[in-house]
Length: 274
Length: 249
Image 1 (spheres, rainbow over the protein chains, first blue to last red):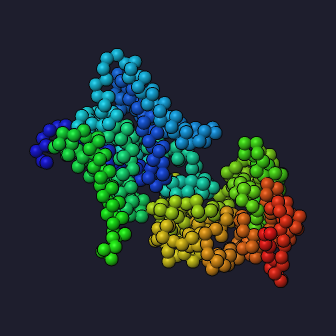
Image 2 (image 1 turned 30 degrees about the vertical axis):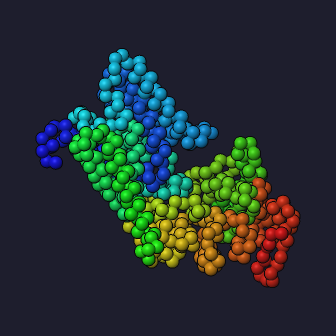
Image 3 (image 1 turned 135 degrees about the horizontal axis):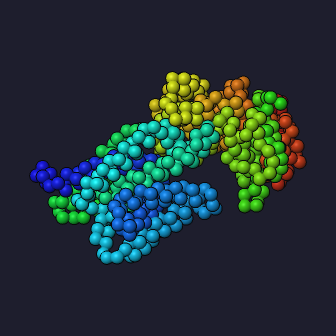
């Protein structure tokens, strides 16, 4: 394991995995406890529009995704409130519109889109240094906002209506939370790609929920699990020459399933064991 | 005038042009203990949401402590239907009650005073020994008490309870109403329920709601009111003095 660290790309990949774990560990907990997995799926898929725009304009797609994912987050948060469209319809529309815009831009861009696949499904082995810096800055932004608004976020995720009644600007803070999800998507794109982002936003948090009833401890644990899954997946993809994004997702999914299975077996011992 | 807590004048609410509340007028005073009964779909929850400024009436006026409900609703202790919660949420009893202070402590840390108020609220509802429990580990009745404590932590002038007896067994219900008797000294209480019998024993005044509101500021309900509310003949039975119990036909 040590000798692979002499490759510069491996060091970058480990740094990317760690930075991604921080963002998805913290924000994934909110996604899971507030049950906004589908909303987060909408934001991440719609972000593909930003990647297409990046190709079209010839600038770093990761940078271009930021305004795009924030805009999708805000539209999903506002559309169902201001119109009579139900929330899941709004999500479905924005989800596919973003993807369609992305494909449109890419087809308008002359030439071949070389690493398009890596934005869709991730390729942690090719993360450039400039993207690591973006990921680091976004992590700092996410940690700062969650640190400052921890109490308010707890109130709105537990009971949004009560929070509104006692004078918390619940809807505005909810939009802030959706924007943090959007930023987390940006951090995760290089690691697992827009299509698989939702795995890292849900599985580490869902696994950590098994071990604690405390939201803060859940965040720490889920950062740990996200890092563990990403680094294990990264190593396996390197050793077995598999695509990194899907290996990371499959490792996470298998650990989650084994834990659930084990828990189930322990709770309901077979009759012969009684 | 100054002891009016909530005042609704000729309030109409429409959902998609269907009237849910029709010309509702009611005043809740400082020491009222009011029960609002009515069939499911009769607009009870909507009425509470109007009082809380969460639903804007299409016509009419709502005042909370003489002011705009959106501004003054932080003086309302709201106890929503507990069945609407995700009981697996990773939060313990103490933190649930502390969120009752979150509006006062907006964008700053909880102070010792916030923590003390939350502590007192938990003590008031006899739930101190459970403060470290995760919310899902409690029984329905215990959880109900925690949500009352959360509302109390905010220092409300009036307590609004939505179907508080739902999901609580009979013995816990008695304890629950005894708790409300105790709280009645300090604030106005409004309970909304479809269960006439439980409510009518404890409250001081009763209103009937089925889109229209029938309220005489007393516990007396005329058979005509009930007829109009439940759209079927309802018998009024007086089980001796002083409690009058009503039973649906």
